[in-house]
Length: 156
Image (tube, rainbow, N blue to C red; front, top):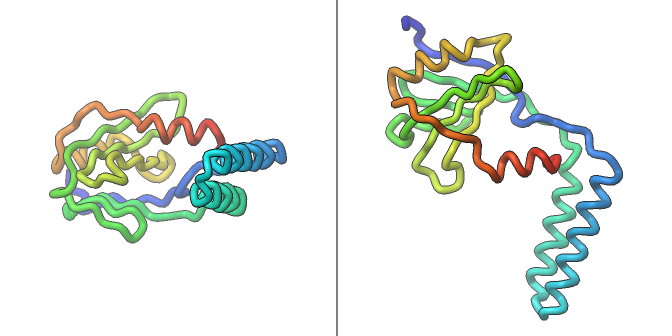
């Protein structure tokens, strides 16, 4: 492949409008967990849960920003963060007809162990991404983390 790099913009996450019921559910859950932690005399955890629930509700309707994804011979760039190939182990392009194609990359980092990058098919072809990154990383079957799928199904 003769390309020097592949760049495409995409939203940082899939946005879904939250209903009043969603906010009630988050609020009731947070208050219930805080009340239980107070029963066990764990005041700091109760305060943490209240702050976390409030933060989730405040940021829930924030629209996603558009960020740039770049794959080059130096590594993968997500917005301003660069992941050099020396920190990455393998990749997989999940391309099925039921959802947006995604580039999954296994990294050494503990917090972002598997990077999930949406591939905008109207800008770049998933096959081109697979061929290009295949020059630098081995292909290995990877799956989206269960925690990410659960959080998306709950509307987070």
